[in-house]
Length: 424
Ligand SMILES: *Cc1c(COP(=O)(O)O)cnc(C)c1O
Image (cartoon, rainbow, N blue to C red; front, side, top):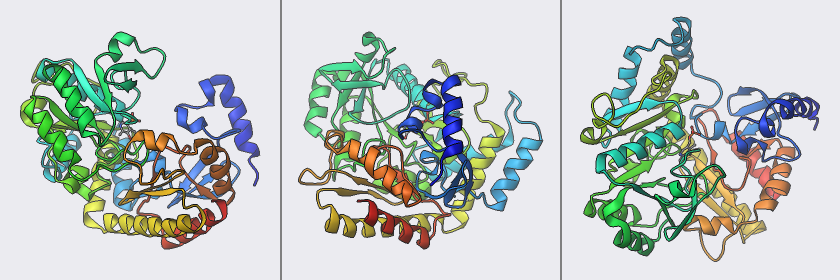
């Protein structure tokens, strides 16, 4: 397979962009990433005209794949041609807010922003402002974007910045605990209960896994936060409008968080984030309340139109049935292959999310530390490359999950299973 043009582009990029990319994970591929020329249904075509089955799907946003249905394309083009944005409110923001509040019962009011990171920044500030408390409990290996309050590792006794540039004194307000560990959570609340503004968690760890909640874990989180007057924040930036259909993962698990962050799918492939929740809490955001929040591009008309028409299309067609069915076929086929060829590995996922984790450790992973023990170098340096040779594009490291879109077909699934058989 030729990659001459990608190689030349990466050479140019290295001169003008740190690491040659605009988001770190894209450079995980060695010796250099392929550059995409365009998408086509469930496939991408690179700068050298190689075509791959694409299970990355923009790392989550592309529920419908690369070909926008006519109603989505038309709405985007209309908005773009009317002038991109105004610094004044527009009807389409209200339409999308109404759509989300109608389908996600915990969300009575919503504020749109421009990325998942901005959504979690706003949610954390809102939780602190609302409760008058400082500390945030997060899950080890959870991901909430590139922001100061969550780029923290270690444990609740000894939280440390996970990135240069984050002061230790900031990290002290963030308490990481292992996912699915009720005792660790109880200990943190026993020690810091009066100063915990919120527990912030992905309902399913999608950036370090996939790791699923054990039976009763979310109910336990709901209970312990309520008991201590802390908020429960579900970060549904990945799972929102993907797992559990239009009701999101919280609908699937039947849990009512106080606040929810959204991103990815809700913008239909354009830059987006949102924080939503109980009206009484949301009203603390400026200008209704005194927790400052603002954004030049927030509620961008093109993004709002893309998100609204994508979700309307999903509501009116069998999108979720289709992606969940293909997801199940993939996981089923992968389970057979893994049992046969690599019984020490694990197939994880639900709905349209899937991943093969290169470890088993006796059972399915229950926390990020289990996934961390996986053969991450083999995954990235040997396996990923072998899959690319088979013309299948998987997420760039062991940790990020992969996504089925409405544009994928049973043929894509079969080709992909054949490729895994070759590469594993
Ligand atoms: C992707 C992601 C984010 C960050 O969103 P960006 O749009 O990349 O800033 C936050 N939380 C979760 C769970 C995510 O998957």
